[in-house]
Length: 519
Image 1 (cartoon, one colour):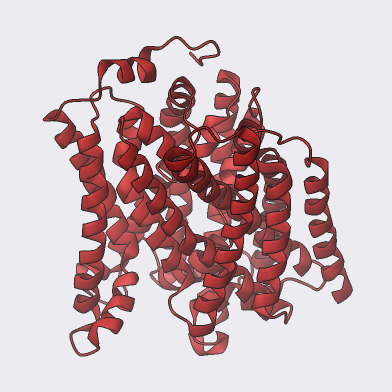
Image 2 (image 1 turned 45 degrees about the horizontal axis):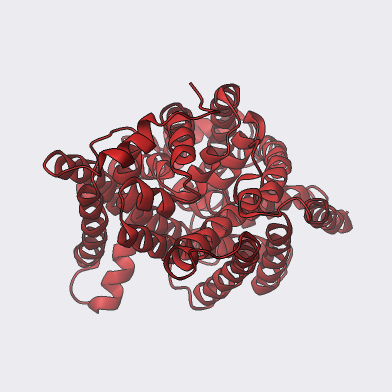
């Protein structure tokens, strides 16, 4: 039945290419390419687009394996937090505000919003550069996760699957833009839901888990939320603090990531927001809890990491190989592939837009034709996919850092810089550009200092700067949370004592009548 695995993969890739062909003439303008035209997207498609951008190969291969091995069932709290905070609460607070205010200001991207909302061209360019730079390690982590999976399960070289993934993703972005990504996200979301349910069922019936026996074993092994296996562990690095950091980072960071925030820009109406809030929450709950539950079973399969090549990045692929029967492993591989392609499409679209609209059009070619900007968006999307592939290959070849920490660094820096400026910017008239600068500059400085300081604190002074840097990267979830807290406080406090943008800008953002405003 091994041939069936390749048939399933082939059918999936053919479906994605079919979407590219189907949408090839639907993205004729910048508005079509970025927002799927004037009508926008309905609630179900917006929710699936949000969910598939939220979860990728990183959660299945990197996070589930690493933190399932370290925390057992305690990792499930991360999935629960993602659903309640990262989906339900985020949609309830941000969706309507973001959609209305971005349409009033005619803001096409997050940097474009910052530039218009705070009347600062420098702020627009700076945020665009930060977004472009720090989305690259996130994309690279997605490629690395897929490379590990296909290398172990199918025996395919990692670089081969990276190139195939890059080619197909670039193809449907190039032709269809946001219309294509929304359609593929819906298809991929359905595949993810079916795949996760099947994966959990097969693991639960495996001899190692034996339905409830495995869960009881994990509970008896003291792998709960508040238990730490090493009493001598410094509180900053023990289990409870690490889990809390991961819950907060992965649940609140999506409030300020350009690829997830972008989903609110194109929501159709109030009904779509209500639908999106419920559907995205259920989606996140199934995907998040399912992934971390499977990761928690890792200690039931292996007693040490030497059996899986010495790294937690290999845990889930090895477990899948041991449990999922031939013929169905292809469907599970498509699950991870679907999660990854949707995320890469969203990230690539966000990165391309900040370069084409915020840097190119915003700085040098303000009167550039719409067709020219649309073409540039297509080309840059493909270039970003290619560049991320190269970074991923280098990281995989030289084992520079674990998949989970690449993602944590990316999310931590972006959310640390932007969560205060964005959340307060769409909610509070008195937020000022000086408050935004305090958040961005302070978060970058704090990240750099804490990586070095915590790195030396974790590995000592004997290993040198390189070892300290690698050790500091493992603290990136905690660092990201510190920066997010700093961002909210600094943006608020500095804004209180500085003058807001001019009254005309505030009127445009908060009070200007909008024909299709969502009440």
